[in-house]
Length: 90
Ligand SMILES: [Zn+2]
Image (tube, rainbow, N blue to C red):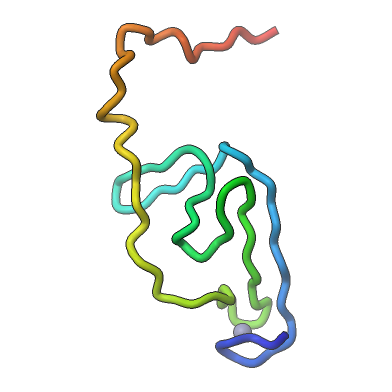
């Protein structure tokens, strides 16, 4: 495999199982959860992409469409349970 940008063969594959701990920040919005499938970086449980060590190009079809953000922050209807996410540390 050679780089789509510079044709170097120094391509590294990144595959990180992040499950729902993925955070994406974009345009002052933040997505917190599984990896979106529409940003060219894997999706679901896995953040996965091929990166050129020569020029830094991510090996995928770009541009991608605007990432969609769920409106979790605004639509939450359990605002009266503020302490639910609090976890006691041992
Ligand atoms: Zn390259």
